[in-house]
Length: 387
Image 1 (cartoon, rainbow, N blue to C red):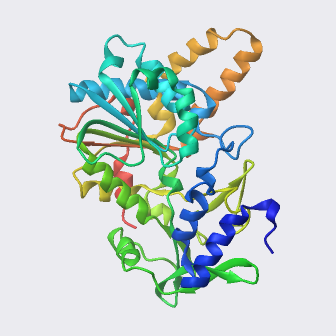
Image 2 (cartoon, rainbow, N blue to C red):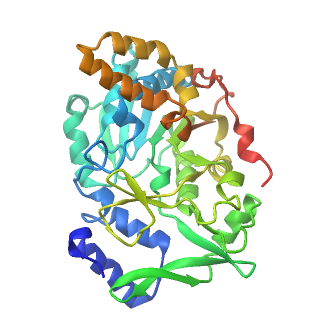
Image 3 (tube, rainbow, N blue to C red):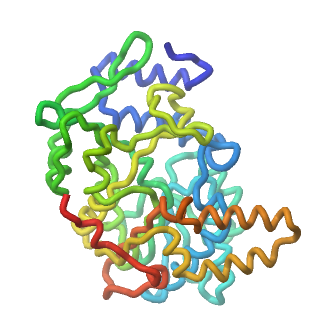
């Protein structure tokens, strides 16, 4: 039985009513409502999600070094494109990454003046929080907001940090040699998995394109929303880059037989669980990114792979080691130095976010560029190993 103290009652009623009227819903639909229902979903409420008082950390919440290094890469990208340059950040959270990027860009003579910043944000509560933090740039018109990607092609870079893992996913199951889908149905006063045929032929087409056949009894997630998103991004770019930071695997690893239950997880108070039908609206739901499909779908709209690497290599290629030393030297006291060191270690340590997170860079309308962030290695060939 669902306890009112552990979820958003209006959200439960909304989901239950839809199931009562139309039958079991896809998990993608359930996840979309749980995370993005206006005023009720996990990402649509003005609540602490990131940091010590939230449910998880992001790279931008650990230390400003992360945004500072991305700003360096944006500087190089703007040089490749020439003219005015627009940075589009989608899913900007509290606005911390945007703040760090804008602050760093302002330290480069003349660069800040020709770089515009557009935040694509669905949540009114998050837009309000971002505006408060970014007030100096918002007042001058350097930062603007939109609810969707622009329809007129721009010259610039689309930046996202832990966006794609939060897109709603379909859950599938290999059963009797065929792909079935796991729907969300009612069970007593709560919700439960219901097995049925695929809701769309796109699910099987997705697996065929990457050459994957699931093992009997294996569960997996399919992120059709990520396919549509990268195609929208490609259409929004006339000339420029896409810089995607997230956690995931190439397709052959993501759908490997040993991942019997897929990668879907819920995050609540810095702990993971698989109780997807508990704390609805009050816990995060995420699934690992299929980097191979993100590349293939990007190619459909003219996005070529610039490089793919881990976060440690990405940051070190941009000079993070020297920048880290400067931050440590500037610490006011030993307590601040320890906090700075802990944050930077979290970003760079391969045993922490440094290896768990990867960075995919794609480009369009450009001769294949050689970027600083890839100086310590790039392995896009790993995205296309035989499954």
